[in-house]
Amino acid sequence: RARCGGSARGGASIPLRPALPRQDKEKKKKESILDLSKYIDKTIRVKSQGGREASGVLKGFDPLLNLVLDGTIEYMRDPDDQYKLTEDTRQLGLVVCRGTSVVLICPQDGMEAIPNPFIQQQDG
Image (cartoon, rainbow, N blue to C red):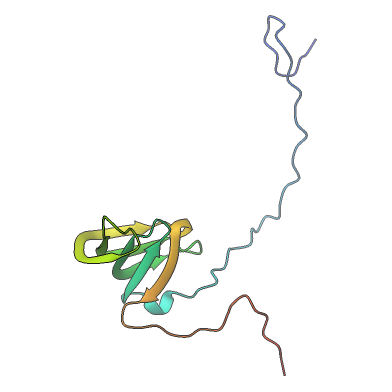
């Protein structure tokens, strides 16, 4: 007698799950809502969920907004007020910023207005 998943000594049998349907052979590539390619090799400033802020030269990114920064400088926070930055900085060098924790990305030399990517543009 054949059993599903049980041991040879008659252990409890585990039912097998039905096979999941195969997805399309070509998976859709995730498209990033931000085009950061124009900021490659330019200095940007990044703010993370924990409140940390850093600036560095953008060397690379992916659709999940993981960022690679070189020559990175972190701006230290006031120990008494976590929301206030001090004049102190520290050199971090080459850094990878995980996209899930990135809150803000802006060019170091100023801001630029962009159209809202979430609003469907109306023709007319």
